Length: 374
Ligand code: FE2
Image (cartoon, rainbow, N blue to C red; front, side, top):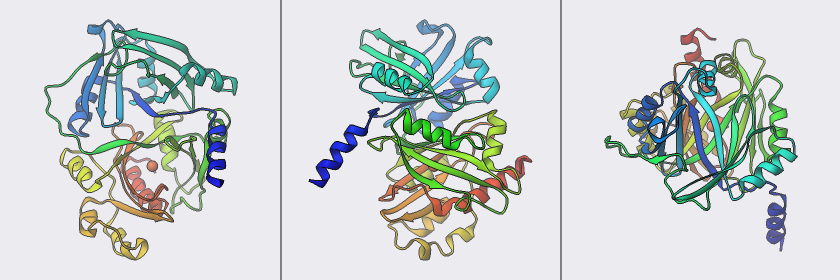
């Protein structure tokens, strides 16, 4: 009985049903080369393309995919475009966190009614494979959420794109799906954005980290995690906190020129394999010192993995009430110290690696110091 009540309550309260992450679109300086990087370094496969050759005059977009993770890499063809301005301002960065929905028009209408700022009115695009309905709203900074309804479409991505494969033979590295996407916002704005996700998007506050949880000798940050009704979408929101020196969030905000997506966490079922492959292909990771591993077993208890393998690959471990997780963070994947990736394997744990924050932030600060930004 209790379960039934809970279930119906959950459904009743899910004012914005989301099926998952549809895709993440980056605006970049050179999409052709970015697509090559994601193929050779991260094991994505090229699946679709749109550009001048396919009748799209102002941009070129490459769609790369690995299991459920779909990235769209878009570049401007002309200087006087919104894409070129975005890249000029932010460097390569995430423009769209697209959400897969059953009803794009209703998702747009209801979120706008609850206060969302419209970015693109609902539109339907068609080709020989069917139709896709889309609409967009603004979130923090210049980032937008696009609602994508694709139940009447069976093409490779969406109308306007053609299927495209590459001569490049790439093996996937085992990345499965987007676990969470983190946004950095300005000092004092975290709670406003949490409220936006709660009130407008029907998300729930899952976790709160304050500067006591997340501080080193030099810098601090605060973070709140919001999650949608079915838990498929998780958005941690960070803001800087007062510290002795410039925090990693301040550094991001300075170089991204405002709020934006800080990191995308992608899940694997075999982090040892995934990280060994990524390293072999040249992906750079943050380094935690050897001392991290010295009392790790005492801190987290038994784990299935071999400690020597974790140490060799510099993978971090954390435990919560429900299990444990393994994680590692890349260095920024562009020249500005902005967007990076997290590789995560969950073995029961639903949290975010709080026990690793101190070791991680000290590693980030060493990188900040090398850049002259600490
Ligand atoms: Fe994360």
